[in-house]
Image (cartoon, rainbow, N blue to C red; front, side, top):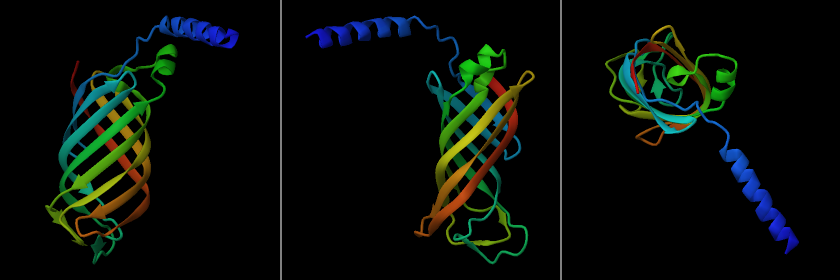
Length: 185
């Protein structure tokens, strides 16, 4: 009985102590335009330290080894794409304590990313299907510079596949986005 009372008392005091911590830093809703791979992106909070971003655009992508053939030299595929990413930020409070910018979700994150590409507008390879998909975990950073300039970089392994059942693992998926934050609320 003494153990139960001790555990309950410890739990109540721990909860009260934890609830008194001030949590001023939270993620924000941000609408942005990316221009490296032209897209419109919306990032919405899913928790104090997490966001979900979705981007639609037309951009450059390389070919996946098991989904393309006939390549010679530099490979390019220009096509419409949809990019979805759940991000979990892990250093927003630390950045705030060091007086670094945390506006517009400026921080380091780990994520789960899903990308799909549609019919090619231009390409120098043949694809096994008009649609391909890739998903995987990533580590990344995103920063806001000046009034509204945005930088995002992330990388991680990915599994890619097409609608015909072809697919494989690619050790590294890299994303670099430069753009402008249009609105935040």
